[in-house]
Structure formats: C-alpha cells, structure tokens
Image (cartoon, rainbow, N blue to C red; front, side, top):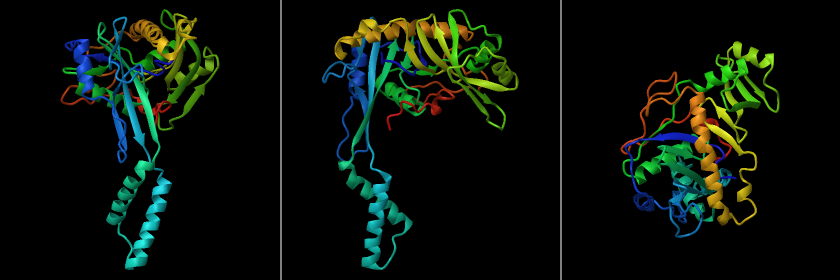
Length: 335
C-alpha cells in the first residue's frame, strides 16, 4: 500500500463544483511533458495509472484521483565550477584579463545550458485525492514547497477551485501534550512508542523517544517544564498507525490488520483500484475522527489556533499557508 504515506489535508471551497469531464479537460491543458534538451524542469498532470493516453482523473468509488508529475535535470555544481575555472583561465590566457563577477555569472549560465542535454533526469509523482462529497483535498507529500506547487497547479487547472488548510479548534501540540500528560488519548486512538518534544525557549532543546514507552514520568516532566510535542505516533481503531505533527501533517501512514491483503499478489495495474479504495476508505474515516479529537474543524479559511489570519488559496492568488512543520519534512523530496 503506497498510495498515501505522508499527507497534507485541505478543505475545498464548498462553492466549487465541476464535473469529471470538466476536470479532465482543465487538467489536460496542463498535461505533463518531459523536459526538453535544455530545460531544467518540467511539471504537469500525468495519468494516475501510468498508462500513456489514459484519463488524468480516475474516479474510484466516487473518489477522484489525479497525479502531479515533476521532472528535473541537475548538472553537478562541481562540474560547472571546474568548467568555469577552465574557461576563465582560457580568457585570461588569451586576453590578459580576468573575467569580472557579471561575466562569470553569464559564463556559468552558458556552461549549465551546454551541459543540460547530457544531465540525468529525476522524476517524482505526487498522488492527489479529491473527495468531492466531503470537500476535502489530500496531497501525498510532507514537503511544503511541493504541496504549494501542486495546489497552485490545481487552482490554475480547475475553474473556481480554492482551498485552505484544515484548521482545528485545538492546536495539535496542545492536544498531544494533554494526551501524554493524562495518558488519556481520544476515543478510538492509542498512543504508540514514538514522539518528539521541543523546548519553546531559546535553548531549542529536543528530546526524541523511539520504540520507547511514553507513559513515564520523564515524558510528563519534559512537558511540564515547557517542551511541546511536535510529533506523536498514534494508532486509530487498530486499523491505521501514523504520526501526527504539530503542523497537522499525518506522516508514516501504515494500514494495519491486513487492510492491504486484497491488493497484494497481482499486477500493479490490477491493484490500483483496490489500493485506492482501501486508502481512501480508511483515511476517509481517520481524518474526521482526528478532527473531532482536536476539538472539531474551524471555519473555511479561518486562522490556525494561536496564529494570525492567513488568506485561502484563490484563482488569482493561489498561494496557501502550509503546515508549520511542512518545511522540515524532506524524506520524500525527489530532488
């Protein structure tokens, strides 16, 4: 089961309403094209099943799945610097002068363009789930800049599309601290054996527990001394284990109790529907339960707990506020 591993959840503007055909047409205007010989990066929408010429929007049990593809070329900096030194030395030998800062910059750009056709390409695919019934958007990424890029492309591709990060009435860090202090997690959840605590003062002290019981006085003392939970491993309903962060990221998702058994053993393309159905079905129940555990959801576009108001993404200005800790999540970064 690899459809969703680390996710960021957004609320879709309730007024948005497009048909499957309209969404397909909109995404088709921004279809992915591979990098050209001298192109550093290319991005766009690709077929979720990986079948060339297939639909860009897959509807499975009423859930829409799309996929954003990113391809980039990168010339090693050491190679560019070596070539630049050689070219500068050649200019000095033939003209008797050393290239200035501006000329070096131009030479560097020229060298990079010359080497790009020989550079290897790297690619990444980002799964995106649109739950129209619940007005919910789920992006399979824990990387802030990548999630922003995906949202921006959705806003450009889908008429009237706008989203805001899902915010809760209780700040996740405050809720996690209470669960650890009282050892009373919300109904349906259990506390697992991993967490991270960070001091809020200038010391920036960090304490991490891995595969360690958390129902101990030491953990409680760290919290009463002012450290705040930034990550906490939880299990929901004995079905999904995950890690909740203070920025409302849901990380390290694992489906338990054989929920993926029905998708195992066949060809990849044969398992896609089953994988998606299981993942969206389980997460479709987990997310509302988690929101309830955090005091319920704030109104669309409202500011997160203890933060100043931030604008929701709109067609003219698609920038969204990203989770406070999303910039730290680089595990799945492709570049």
